[in-house]
Length: 129
Image (cartoon, rainbow, N blue to C red; front, side, top):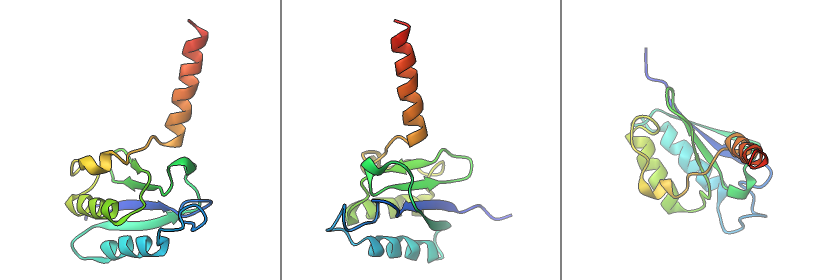
């Protein structure tokens, strides 16, 4: 049985991937670059898009999933340097297989469901003080 690919989900919905919010970013080129990486024989990467990942304040958003590892949510994926770091990490194996580079750690964001849960917990904790 072959190893499952690392899945890269690129948000391209309401504001991520739009010229309205990020006019200086070539969103189509970003997606083409990630798809070229996925097509290379050296990696096991699958790229897909999503309409909205509900973290618009962090656009452009990319989520990297690997079997047996927690998904890694990356925000502000807006330039070539971030894509260079992302490609290098994916080529090394991605989540659970290679450590997240320090440069990408700066782009890590909290997923919306966890953020809401933490806010609710804080609100509950404040009520019991």
